[in-house]
Length: 316
Length: 316
Image (tube, rainbow over all chains, first blue to last red; front, top):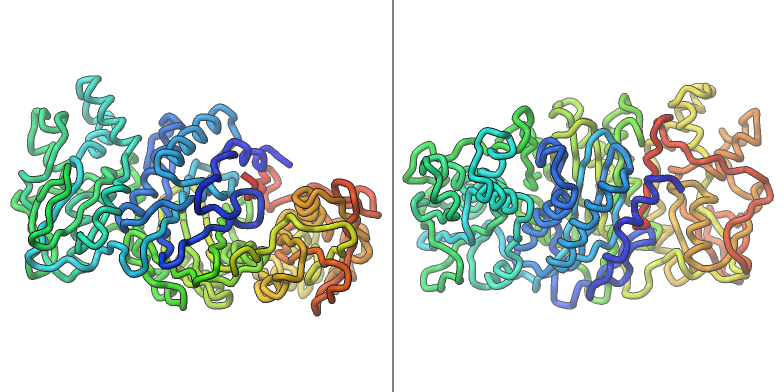
């Protein structure tokens, strides 16, 4: 047994949960999907130097990788069941691994995602793939398709903080230190809207989580639903930090074009109440594509690395 | 949409299957697990330069990554349901991607594993993570635990061909060209024993797939079952190519210590017939660990790279 096989020991004790029949230590994990429910699953990969800086705190890297993957379960309205972790590392460094596994463990516990398996391999850069599993009643999962003309477009939380944090990390902007701390926390510790997603089952006509950018992700709903979406830029909610930004246009561009906020965007049929903490930002109309009353509001979404963009897509 | 988002298009049309409720194109896939069955899942990662040479045919890389992951389903006796693919690449090269996706597609079809989702990211080296999903009747999955003194130790197929192929790839050995072709095919196109695994349900007392090396993997059964295993080296089946090797000790060492053969090793209670194409190679006795009548028969298992070993483990 070599150092890489031993890495698994940093992740022990995280594999207990109500749906876990068999956790780590065999050829595969076994999960129970309740009768009448379907399995929802998604994989999300983050790469050092592309999705997060090489000097990021490993605890944050672990937490954020799990949170980003869990956000896809939220977008489907699924109840978390379990996850697996595929980790590629240049070397087995105990300090890094301890901190990283603490971050994974904190997120596992926060989002009710026991870690039931994984694979650790040696490679040139840190690559973290998190596969999440959830369950949802048969035929009831939220999808991108389903929005109809007349529906309102609604979002949770606020937008643009993660994009602002990326500007800060790239040293293209230097906010007040306390504001910077807030933005970095928003970037590294996103809160997937799992409870909201489940509350939207049988309520929302379509849903997506905002990882690529608000307008880009609304474009996915519009395309899948064969409708158009009109967005009122001023209605998109901003955090206090972004509202106080000296250049409102910049803050607005981050909110409309930036990714990584991991909020939910969804459509509500007429008459359906807007959930608490959510904001109506536009409406579904006949047509195709997304229009916004602020022209050229959405710069291409930039990841951390200026030279590579490493966009993610589950659209294969 | 950039080149990396477009990569998903190389993998279209592979997401249809009886258990696939929703394939690609949404935030997550939805899979149906039949009533009375449990979900079996495992992730397997391969890294360029560690698990396969950088100049390997991309078709082989894609096929082998899927086959290796599917082998874990075989070891549990699970029926294949679906898979996802997380792919990290330094660049989006159309020729490479076409060939790689052909290999993935061939394996998807051969092993009944529709590709229901994935994630493509930019990174320094090629990293391929395949997550496989299968189903098995509740409580019936094969496990590593369960072997009892008096059981016979049985294996499918032959052993050592993949280890011999690694020696060939590392240019430490130059076999007859036709033999070399055979060995490389065994390495790059492993055949996970899915039908055998399902046939062993309710028959075998314990099972594992041989990826780390025969003696090492039997050690996992022995440890999980709290028993000892005695192996008779001469009973371990070899291919014609390995039987013809000028140094029988070398061939035997490959068979006992080499990994990547993706055959099944399992234990059968007394009186249970040995399945066709399988061989009894030893017995389960009281005690701990694995003994073999050929001393020092098992050199440490070497991956392709001489400088890194990148062993895999699901034991976290």
